[in-house]
Length: 76
Image (tube, rainbow, N blue to C red; front, side, top):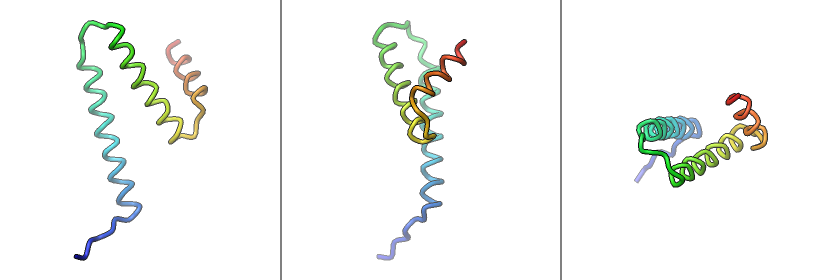
């Protein structure tokens, strides 16, 4: 069996596309969920926010404190 091994470029393109799909789906989930807000939903959104901040911190080489500062500044 002669299997083609993917190049780093192919894997990066595939993973970038996967991340874009996941982000679009997450955005749809968040904007489409108009249920009454409660503490369970607030907690779930807080956890998702924390995971996203960690991902941005990891990939962007930023400190989580810097991310929090930017979010606070944007919120006003």
